[in-house]
Length: 201
Image (cartoon, rainbow, N blue to C red; front, side, top):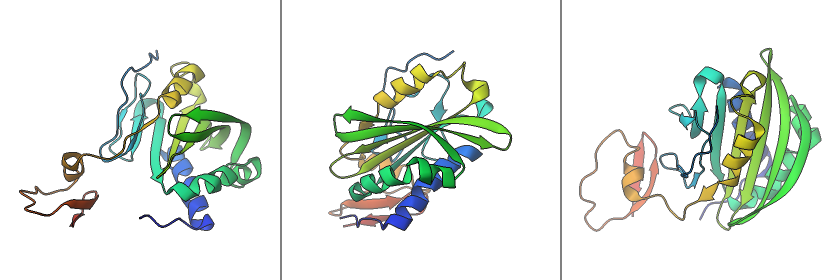
């Protein structure tokens, strides 16, 4: 069972994810893609590919990115608070609008904001879904220079496609390790720390 995060930790993690985006002709994709090891996926706009630097999708040439995170379910309300106009302003983002959405897995909301980062003006979409056993957080960054290639309609279509799968297949989890694992005998996979270790039960 995952322990709920304290509010300061939640706020820090939310803004770390939003901040990560600042470092880092569309057609709707038809298939939901789950980044390796992630229970949360979506159908990314054309031009975006799975990232090797973070969990999500990116177009490095245009500095467009979609960062995906699965947080404990109790953090949904904290994420709402941390994306208020006042909280966003503390981190250099200008609040534009908030929308309430419906999602097959639970309640959801979308916040749209803008940010000036290293002389580049960015548009950001922060989408959260409060599912029964996790909070899905998806943050999108599009520089103004790439708005024609990635218009708002394409971003909204991608966010509308956000899906949560019940589990991550064992084979997919094991593929995240830098070594091969043979027969598990009577053990079951309890979890994987990507690139480092696995836990058997």
